Image (cartoon, rainbow, N blue to C red; front, side):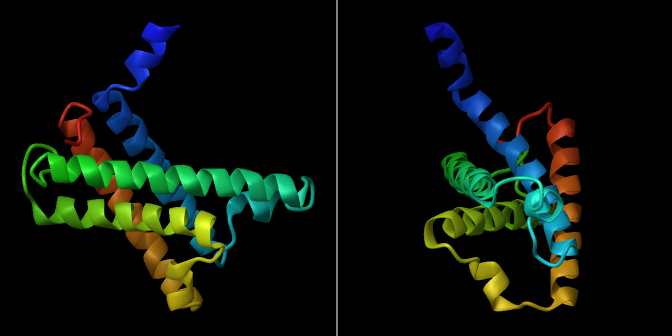
Length: 152
């Protein structure tokens, strides 16, 4: 059991898990923005599940998103601010979209309000940001695969 835990807490594994979580979060967040800023879990299951349970799941997910993004930011800085073995602007922009989005959600869990959505509540802005999230997720995933599943 201890060996199993040790394996999953190695930096390479933590990076992989943080990256994959962040990729999924970007897609889910884009979908939420397309729904007008409503988390899909609340949008689709709000009538069937307890509001308290949905809020608990969302809060935990947002906390994990914040921690995963903070960890990736830390690893990026420790790795000489390189992504996929190089320094390229497009990689950095997509990475920052992911990290800022995740940190924002982490703050939602702590503060109870979404700073990013407080900047604008325009549906057009939501759609544009959602498209940016999808493009960023696709770019990061492609680069990650091309680099043998390593981000740092």
